[in-house]
Image 1 (cartoon, rainbow, N blue to C red):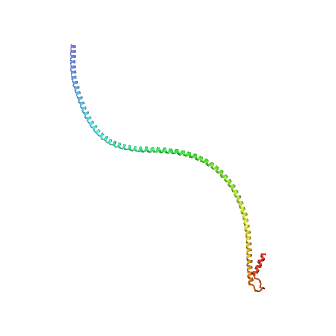
Image 2 (tube, rainbow, N blue to C red):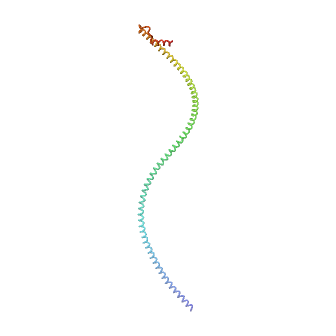
Image 3 (cartoon, one colour):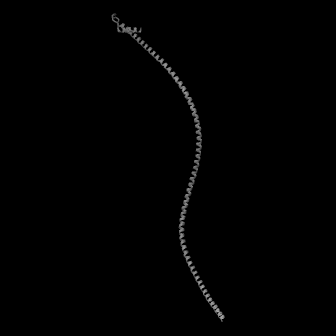
Length: 244
C-alpha cells in the first residue's frame, strides 16, 4: 500500500511538475516574446532617436560646414590677397635679387679689377724698388765720382788760386813799380812843365820888357838924359840877374 501511495504520489508530482513546467514554459515564452518586442521597440526608438540625432547632427554639421565654407571663402580671399601680395613681393624680391646679382657681379668684377690693380701696383712697386735700388747704387757711384771730381777740382782750384794769387801779387808789384815810375815821371814832367812855364813866362816878360823899352825909347826921345830910370828897367835888370 505504501508502495502504491508512493507510486501515486510520484505520478502526481510528475504531472504537477509537468503542468508547472508547461505553465512556466508558456510564461517564459510569453515573457521572452514580450521582452523581444520591448527590445525591438527600444531598438526602433533608439534607431529613431539616432536618426533624429544624426539628422540634427547633419544639420549642425551642415551649418558648421556653411560657417566653415564662409570662413574658408574669407580665408581663401585672404589667401588670394596674400598670394597676390606674395607674388608682388616675390616679383619685387626677384627684381631686388636681379639688382643684387648685377651689383654682386659688378662688385666681383670691381674686386677682380682691384685685385688686378693691386697686383699691378705690387709689380710696379717691386719694379720701382729695383729701379730705386739701382738708382741708389748709381747715385752712390755718382756721389763718389762727384766727390772725387770735387776733390780734384778743389785741388785744382787751390792750385789756380795759388797761381792767381802769385800772379796778382806779381801784377800788383808790377803795378806798384809802374805807379812809382809813372809818379816819378809825373813829378819830373810837372817839374819840367813848371820850369818850361817859368821859362815861357820869363821869355814873355823879356819880350814885353823889350817892347816897353822900345816904346819908352821912342817916347823919351828928346827928354833929358839925366832923368832916372823907370821901375820897369829895374825890374828888367832884376830878371836878368835871376836868369844868370
